[in-house]
Image (cartoon, rainbow, N blue to C red):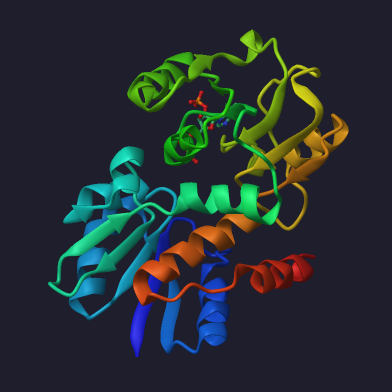
Length: 272
Ligand code: ATR
């Protein structure tokens, strides 16, 4: 039976085995998918062993996405741009392909599942770490009216703005410099899960605007609550993105596209 896994650290609360198990059941694919706690210093040997033992595909999550990018023999366009890999796939010639399905996962959740328009929208991304790197290129492809990256450490936002400047217009700033309204605010900081928030002015969300936290938890995150308090028409966490990026990885590995809707609905019902 074909073997798949997610590596990360920490990994104990990963929903990926459940999601891929549901996809396999739904599509009639025979496979096994497990989660393994792999700290960065053990990454290379763990991945080599996994593929040497016949493993077909791996997901890599925090803090391993950049290491996975370095490990891959070949990179898909999405991974090349993001400089991060969340999906490794063994190809028929034995080489390992690295891809990044986070950006398309976010786009599918925003635009298909929630019908949030991005074209001609004013979009603000909070944070300038790995999560932001994965989503900037796909967001620019949507031709927003404006894309701004705000970060505590201004230089990191500026570095990303420079790096992606060829793909479209984007601006970097600090949180205190935000002085206009945005239709969509995406939280890509790691602050939210610790119950923390970047320092956001009260008037940066446009009327009827949407908030989206790339992180997810069983309870509403600090940023989801911020959106609700500031009049967002939708304030969502990243559960849908998680299922969508998994579906794209499943498609890459198996050539079959699972239906994400029933899986998202089920996981939402299972939240406590
Ligand atoms: P990830 O891969 O999840 O993006 P990361 O690369 O460590 O993780 O990036 C974390 C991001 O969250 C950074 O943008 C970080 O801001 P700095 O670049 O200034 O460090 C941001 N972040 C983390 N905790 C934060 C907090 N309490 N307030 C504001 N931003 C925070």
